[in-house]
Image (cartoon, rainbow, N blue to C red; front, side, top):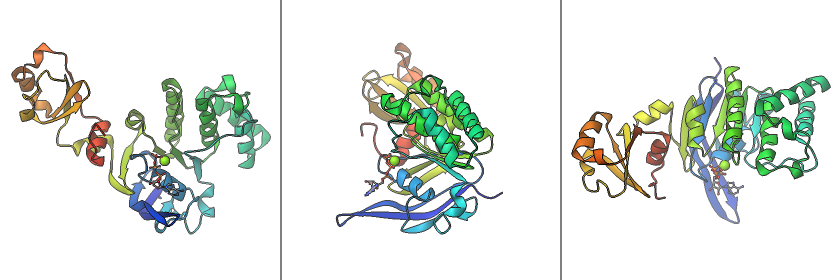
Length: 304
Ligand SMILES: Nc1ncnc2c1ncn2[C@@H]1O[C@H](COP(=O)(O)OP(=O)(O)OP(=O)(O)O)[C@@H](O)[C@H]1O
Ligand SMILES: [Mg+2]
């Protein structure tokens, strides 16, 4: 099978008023089969720069991006029809409605009038945006305007969708409508490359997760593979001060506002509860999550 996305050693410097910022410093990552691949990284880690290069909007200093075997940089025309994009910062036209945006976008993509109308209805139903389909964008909320951009992108019949923070500013219910849309395309065998700062979103949707920092890949794998990279598999949340000093022998202790978090091994949980006197307080026990993986990989403390 042709690999949906193959990124090798991508480098990009920005030069502004004599000052160089290295946004990508040898980024490599792969979607080796149709999948939802989430890219996580702190602000400024190079995610949008990567998406711009992969979608042919920006030329890298060096490195390659192949989409289904086509080189994006040397032959952008050959990948144009394969890609759809939600850019990070994109404002719809103020005096057009969501219906008009999606309809005209479909027409630009070459769909017939009837086909475009069908597609508009399909997206309206999928994202559940029927109630404001005929309201001009100027009169919509920020989240509703974001949904126009998401709707336009998902209306395209692409093989790979690059969604750069598609659910930013959306309420929790609306966000899940977008997730349903993303899952629908995944089921059709499409590849979705998603950037997000919502770790619950990445956990819920991703086949694989790539964590980037300072323009490089730190790790890529399934959620389980990333969790396995940690020294501990269990986290226990304990009210601050309750067992101070008695937790250190059992693992790694991190303070988090009102709580202490003990990272430990699940086999030791019973022993910890008994010997640290935790029976007398309310504690939460669970597996390590993507937030623990993220913090551990990008190296900041929770206080950061
Ligand atoms: N047009 C630009 N000119 C100069 N520097 C830029 C430009 N765009 C981005 N940068 C710099 O490149 C680095 C990477 O930015 P990028 O937008 O790719 O990060 P990001 O991971 O998408 O961040 P965020 O999570 O905040 O969206 C940052 O240090 C940023 O300041
Ligand atoms: Mg960005």
